[in-house]
Image (tube, rainbow, N blue to C red; front, side, top):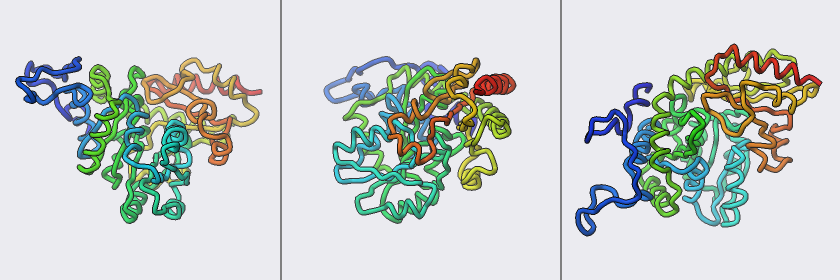
Length: 379
C-alpha cells in the first residue's frame, strides 16, 4: 500500500520521462479534425492532471472510478445529486456540520429529506429505513465525537433493503480504512485534510464501485462543473505521495496525546478510537488498519475554554484538520455551528468540547504546549 501511494495511478509522464505528472494548465484542446480529439476536449469534462489524480484515488480506495472536485462539499453535493425529490437519506447523528447544512438548507428545499440516527446502533438504522430512504450516509469515526459505525454491517443491511451506503472517509484516508472493501457503494473525502496534508489546497474526492453509479456521477460532475483545477490536482497527487509517512506520525502523536489527556484532571472525557474503553473499539480495529489521529475532549467546568485556546502556542486555533501542523477547534461554534443547538447538545457536542488534530511536530512539544494551556485555563 505504501508503494501504491507513490507509484499508483498514472506514474510520471511517458512523453518526457518526468517522474511527476505534468500540470496541464489548459482549458481546451486542439481537435485534429471535426469531432476527432486526442482524448480531451474541454477541461471541465476532463483534464490529464485531474485524470491522473482520479485514477490514483480509485486505485487507493479499490473502486471502479474516481472523481475530483473543487472541495469536499462539492463532492458531497454531487453525490447527493444522485437522488431526487421525495427521496430520503439517513445520516449519522454527529455528522460534519457542512454535510448537515447542505442537506438541511439546500437539498431539503428541493424535496430531498433526511433522518438523523445513531448509526452505531444497527437496530436504530434498520428502524429508520422506509420506502423513501435511498441511502445511508455515515462517518466512522464520526466528526467530532469519533463515534464508530460498523461499516460492513450497515452496508450489508443497506444491500438487503436495496439502498446505497455512502461513507465519508476523510478522518481515516485509504491508508487506514477502505469502505468499499467493507461493502460501501460510494466513498467521499475532503481531500483538503490528510490527503493534501499541508493546509495549502481545497479539494474533494468521490469513488464508486459500480459502473452505473460511476456513469451517473460522471454526468453530474460534468454538468454541474464543480471540478478540481489542474494545479490543485497536482498538489494533491504530491500530498498523497507522503500520506503513509505523515499518517504514521499523526497516529503516533495522537495516541501519545490521548493518553496524556485521559489522565489530566482538566479533562472530563476523551474521544479517541485508539483508547480501549472507546465504544466500538473492537469494531474499529476490525474494519481499519489503525485508530486514526483525531481527538476530541471535554474540558472540566473548572477550566475556561477561551483561555485554553488563547494559551496554545504550537497548535493553531483554526478550521480544518489533517495538516502537518497541529490544529485545534471548537466544534460548537466552528465546524458544527450550523447544527441546531438542541441537536448538538443531545449528541454530546457541548460548549466545552474541543477537537484536536495533532500534526507531525515533536510529540514532546505538543504535550508541553497542551499541558501549559490546560494549566493556564484553570479558573
